[in-house]
Amino acid sequence: MKGVELYSQVRHAVRIEGLSRREAARRFGLDPRTVAKMLAFPVPPGYRAEPRKAAGQITMRKVDGWQTLATPIPDQPIQRAA
Image (cartoon, rainbow, N blue to C red; front, side, top):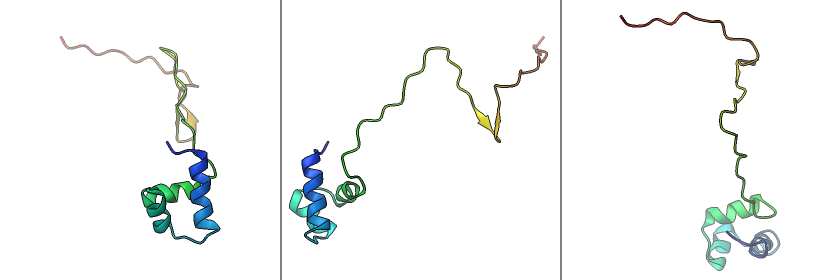
């Protein structure tokens, strides 16, 4: 992962010095897409892990704007093969 110092150097080179993204990529040894991402964020984005759910925890779902688990599910007879 790239550091904050490299982010600031790349952003300064492109925005203040007037280098193109491609020239900045060559100067710093980066991919041009990485330079584009560096220009999109002021600081490196941190690691974003989704919080883990406890085993058996039910997740609320929304379908067509209605909460599907908010209403009880009607009992349905079970059909078994003979």
